[in-house]
Image 1 (cartoon, rainbow, N blue to C red):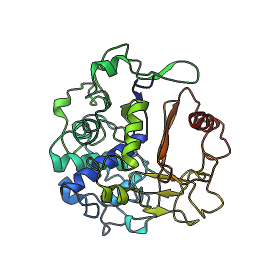
Image 2 (cartoon, rainbow, N blue to C red):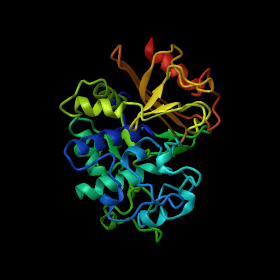
Image 3 (tube, rainbow, N blue to C red):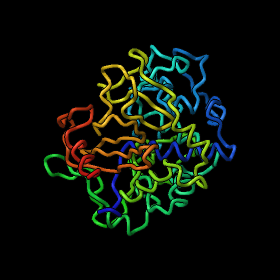
Length: 339
């Protein structure tokens, strides 16, 4: 099980952020540049058209983008057209406001930017920039994983016992994501920098717990050859911190965010923050995941240089909460992993 890949949901966003920082280090990306300059098409908040959208805002969920449209787009979708829909935006807050609203839709945009500057598909970028350097047999939507990984895919189950995702039966999926609207799935028609969502950058990473642990070691500074010390510091610096009115905490779940990085047990946080599933008051950073009955997490403590990677499956959407904004099941898994 330690080496069997699982769809780890939104921990994917943390992995994408690392790849963005590596592309930044090569000079291909600037966190504060208007992403329209990279995309070749204009991305603008319809209510705040004079405010550019940047990678820093997208990675920290302060871009004004919201999940008002379906971010799981079919193969032939046009991201530029989708982002012209007002439902894709928070009409009360623009990019310059620094208002936090967690949005999966930020990450197809980020993936499109990465493709535009590298002229490679997103899934291959992730292999080149993260999985191969760390020697992890991981992938997005099963496209670059080995057949060994495919054969050992962990099935995600619904609470009633039915399969929710990845019941592969030892075979790579014929179509890794949502086919085109005519039902075809010819990935050769995928347009770099124009779609962004097909490989599920917001949640489609398949990776084993051991693979997550290697990413955790990277977050603790063990691999400066892969992620420079100064880039790690920038990524794990709080870009947004809840002050009681500057964002949606989702019930105290989000109280501080970096670049693709969640912070836990934020010191001196407002009373509504319930962001400590460990229950020990120690600040940690990493990312959580939730989808298809799974809850997952990768969190590290920069002081002790220790971390926890976990997942729980078969949970209902309304799984009971613990003492924090996390579920009972997650808190129990964390406690078990620490013992």
